[in-house]
Length: 282
Image (cartoon, rainbow, N blue to C red; front, side, top):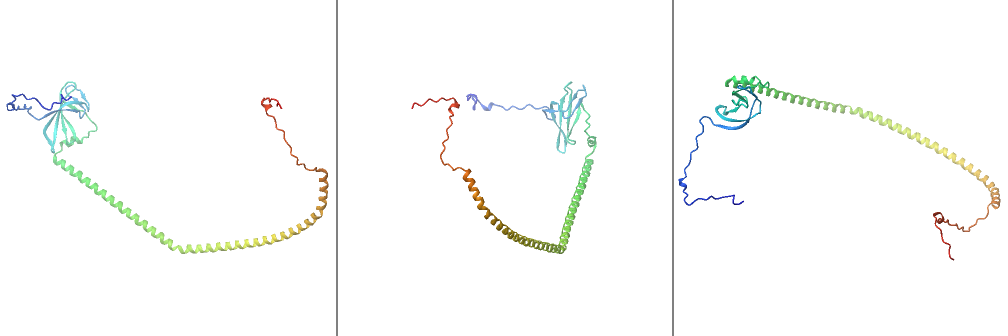
């Protein structure tokens, strides 16, 4: 790879650089400068020679020419293309005033409904008329701005008025509450006195009920003591007879208890499982 990247050149021993002469470039064609570019058709058109329709966006190899015309220091360019059917020359140029293109010769631009008639009117108006129209539009915009500013001022004034009304309502409500505070306090005092009276009455009734219950319980305890004393005497006399009878029945029917240990016989589960035990030798 290093052999391909030659950094120095070979100069023979008899090389004389003074003998090298500068060659002049060939002069270009007279007229405006042209340049070959690739572009798309800026609008749909119809060829005048053969009637071929060329749709918008079709690509062409065109010649671009800078004309001597200018619009406010903006250069105007002219483009040359060929018809795709008959190879007739079609030219169109830029229109910076209307931000569009103008078809010059070789084709006719198709009708486009979205293009307004104002474009045709703008072509015929002079510079003075154009300046007057721009001034009128600017004056209309200024009037619109003044109206907008007036609306903003009115909206701000309405907001201030609404805030002031809210403040007045708040102050009046606070004053009314302060004036009605005495009546509210009096009503609260009356309600508190009523509540205290109801509580005192309730406590008095509870104390009376407790006293009545205490008296009733005291009377009930005295009666219960009398009844218990009578029952104790009756049971004292009858316990001797019952004791004798019970001893006789028990002596005859109840056998004496035995405390001998009973040994339970263990079950032989080997027979149930099919296991046969061998007899013991001893």
